[in-house]
Length: 114
Image 1 (cartoon, rainbow, N blue to C red):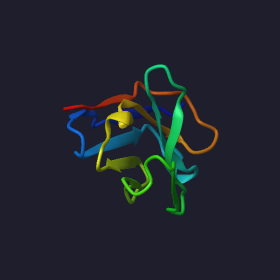
Image 2: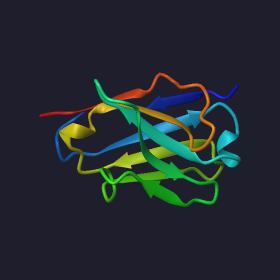
Image 3: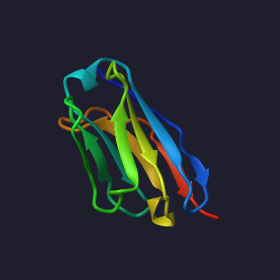
Image 4: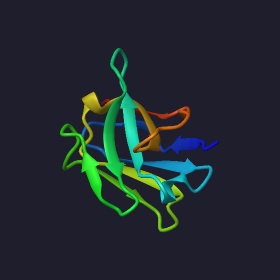
């Protein structure tokens, strides 16, 4: 089974930046696209950004222009660079596949507050 390990979350002030990392236990991102999701308190899990095996990216309207999804050359790690953070970005962030998502990891907490 494929497992996902998220890291890089923390407390940042509004307007700050943070870079999240997602390490996959296998080579799943070489055959399926990667994705970042987030879930804020009282809300449903939301798709934030995706990247295909070919490198094409897509973003939710709420983060477009501020967030960037990328991967390493071996397609073992997917990243999410978050700039110009807003309090409404506060959530637990999860990574998984773009299609046919597997088991969810623990996620990493991102808190945007002064």
